[in-house]
Length: 266
Image (cartoon, rainbow, N blue to C red; front, side, top):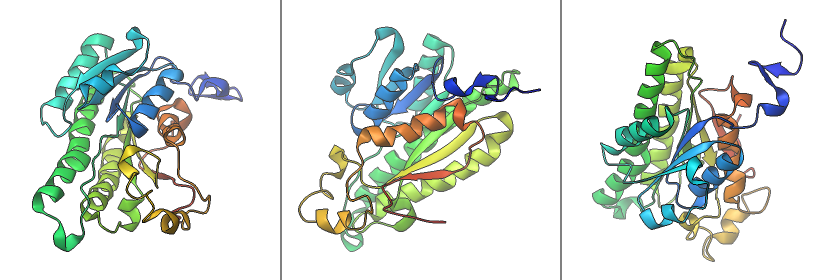
């Protein structure tokens, strides 16, 4: 009989740790990605960080045995497979993915150029698909070999994907697409104990949100957030790392909002 206070052979005290897990984080050089990286390291994981900005990756302070730095553009069709192959070669496998890389190219619908639309789709949606596919294939190979992989993939979406966003139809469409991607992958892979979830943020205090947090929009947006303040990257990272942990072992196909109440839905 399972002892009270144990889940999956682990005690309740250890369910929230990431000890022994190998985590891949895209868009890891700043903002939410950097916060996820630092929290995962603090919880005992080894972390492979992917970003376009090599110098910023090099500035991340971590035990050299606990971090791998991979420079590249997530929209490059070859990068995801190369990144997974490197982590497997160095550490023997990948257990968790934070699909976090994203950009914005704001414009009103009637003024948006096709290149602005396409670049956001390439990075925010296709780039996430490529990394989800590459990590998923690796986890499936382990499952088919008889290993209980217990993988966890977290796609970083946004409230914009649930409620729309003025001046960012490209960004909102990509983030909405991530929700469909999350549910589809969760349904396909659940039988292999590969969990796929999405985390939807409101307004996190990062360089990407400087415009919406500026004087022009600040008061109007803050008035819609019941908690009356922006999220800090460290607050955003906690939900992602929880979904990586064994404490979330029965959660899949969900989109969890971390937004101070900005968007509420049943």
